[in-house]
Image (cartoon, rainbow over all chains, first blue to last red; front, side):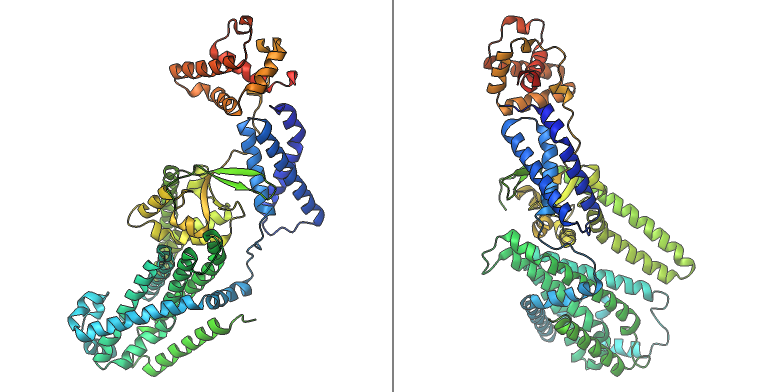
Length: 326
Length: 256
């Protein structure tokens, strides 16, 4: 059986046009608040178009008209059946979304920290047992030399080696570290294996550097050099790892009866908040590393640098642990 | 992930209505991606040139600005455009593609950010090989970023009201001289065959001459097999004209 397409179109066209206009308005102004009468009218138009589509499915074969109605119904459906509240930018809520998301997935952060600690221990022992391993483990040529020589050189420097490139250096640090955090998150899609490898390797480097400098009796220099930026940078990379493990957890779905799609939908906003927060922290860490960490005693006393780093760490811990608690 | 790749994503509403989104093919997505890569690289190049101009004041801070702008554009290009253009970037818009939610719901900023932040993994080791393989083997043609964010990339449907004149209007139709037979044709014609005939008529000018003759011969044979019209009904009609007459008879309001 075939319906009279021309008559059907003529009769229903005004309703389709009205729905089209309403949807265009809603789509261009996502924050628009409709009155009760407008909402009821939208619902009526949606149901009417749905009925038209059903009628067309049953009685007609006109594919282009069907495409047009499907397009209208699908757009109306996405507006009417959306239960998640629209994401509006409220700065306070946005700021607090980060620590709240962090606390909701504390186990993933503990896992990220645990893997990094295992990496640190591995790097430590690798350097202690086989100092030749330094050539393989250390990622930067600047770390290849003797720690004692480096400390002596840094402390006796009379010129500023970063003069004229300080800001550029900070930008390179920021972008590189943010990329590492993003990769730590993205690697979660490999069921967490990629995130695990990245965090472990990061830990190995940290452990190796610590073993090298502490072994040479340069613990104070190491703390003064690493703490100002490391107290923010290392937790931020761990946060990237946390996001990666949250993603992996949603993919694997241990002890969850929900389908994968629902699990992933459930963590999307938290991942957004965590990685956004980590990126902000890394911008700060980049500035500190370039403008503070690279200056040593006597220009900047180690005690001051260590105190600064510890204060930052305490502030970060306080923010992540308590901000936005209800 | 399964190997049975679908060509469309079907969504059933609580009202029992089913609508579908035709899924984008990996090839179309690759072309859109190439356009986007060129677009963001162009914008980033322009931005760094502008930043370099600030070198008059301080070369260090100009370089800082250049690095930051390049990074922000490379990461933010797709995020900002997909957010502002509801699932489209320049490349997607050019090829009529759109990112949509797997459930047909509104696309959330968190989904947009997530699908784009997973690009580094999809892009491994070169030229989106991992993402391409994932799109080829996943049921809904999703790269890893889409799987994580619950999104798919679909072809945008045309939104204009269809022009029914081509089929529904009729000046003179010899088949309508036998209204009872035309009514019978309308009852017996299968929706699939009619849809095929409509598509054939709509695109008739794009076919090779021999293919066009063969296609309309098959369609005419099908319609003739359904109802036996008198010889006079076919007089002077080619197979193509007969198919058009049959369609007009099927959609004609005059015999309802």
